Image (cartoon, rainbow, N blue to C red):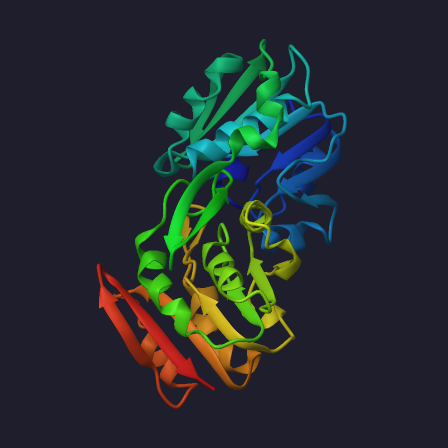
Length: 338
């Protein structure tokens, strides 16, 4: 059992219809049912967590929770402060004055900072501190503003320029590099003009920057943008819509490149290596190991990655050669052909 779930189970006032938000993969829901909860539902934006919970109960994989009547909501804090603000606005809108939201998280993940974000909506109470975690209660006495209910309120927009073209990037809370172009992607962008024509798989699409540039360069390109995160997938869709590129885009929720069965002319990625607050290299390493299986003959793999990561050797084990196109500002641009 996750330590955060153990702290929750130190208390016995759980009852009625409960919504778990961003929960870890464990059996907390069964324990809550044993102490009085009549129905447990899950809202998650992590597709792996959704896949786990969907085997047991009603799970919503989306950027918004299912509109329903809940008696209590338990939020496991996300990594990004802006994402917690968004999640709180969504959850409080599902409840009424006098009802409670509970916030749980690890001390090292910033639960005390996160608890301060509750104060705008009512009285906060620290219920517990154990297992290097804290549990807080918010008794709601103020509802979010009408503005907070509009998705556009939460979108960060910024321009990027490539080859005399300007694209508007749209990114939602929690998406990597939400309000600016990150250094790694900036290193890769100048090389995208060399990418061959044809179908493209963008692995770990984020806000859709790489995909949108490739689509803008060649209107015949069909882009499949994949990510584990619902906010990333929606951000990519928003970016394509903002730049009138939507007809070229397909988005797909995955947990790993092995979830994909189609083949492509190009696989491109600024590989993710964080899952929530934890560092996780498995999905990115699997990309290096299995990308060749997703490529057609003479297909291309383009990756930008931190210099310290051992991706070149993983790629060379599958491809005849891994070519380093650039090494700047801590990032390498890597290329291989099937």
